[in-house]
Amino acid sequence: MTVMEMPPGFVFPAFYSYYESPLKLVRTGGGGVAGWRLSKDTGGWVPANHLITKLLVGEGDEVEELTREEFIQRTEHDRGYYLRGEGPIFALYETVRAIQDGVARERRYPNPTELALIAGIQRRTFVMFEEQLRQLGDPAADPSLGLEEA
Image 1 (cartoon, helix red, strand yellow):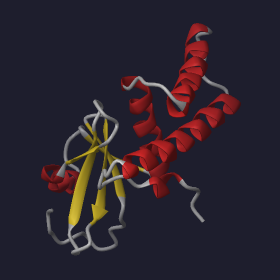
Image 2 (cartoon, helix red, strand yellow; image 1 turned 90 degrees about the vertical axis):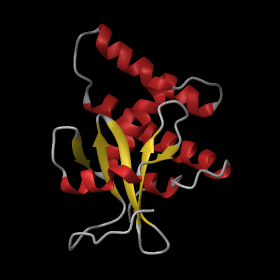
Image 3 (cartoon, rainbow, N blue to C red; image 1 turned 135 degrees about the vertical axis):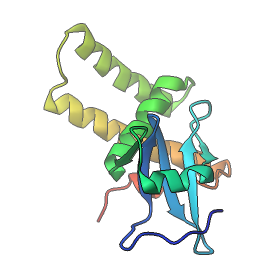
């Protein structure tokens, strides 16, 4: 774990895209910071502590700060695009793909209803996938990120 002084007002968790890959920074139990990057092979989280300083400095076009919602949408976009499998999560990924394919076939932008449906499905699949990761012992899994904020 990387221990470093954080900028004043820094809020955890923090969300980023690094070379188009979702990444999050979280506070550790010992007061440190841990970085976790999405694995496009498994959909789980791999340590990315070596990127913490680069993310915080934010230099370069490869780093983009994300909102929680943008982070969830990018994570689920990548999981739905790169992973294949059976079960309810993958059926929902197929539903999103079908909507997106229909929009692409019709050569148009998604309408507000389609955008809301995709966002709702992706929020749900995020929670479901993170719950499975937690059950499998992934230390960075956090289904609470996908729950509605109070």
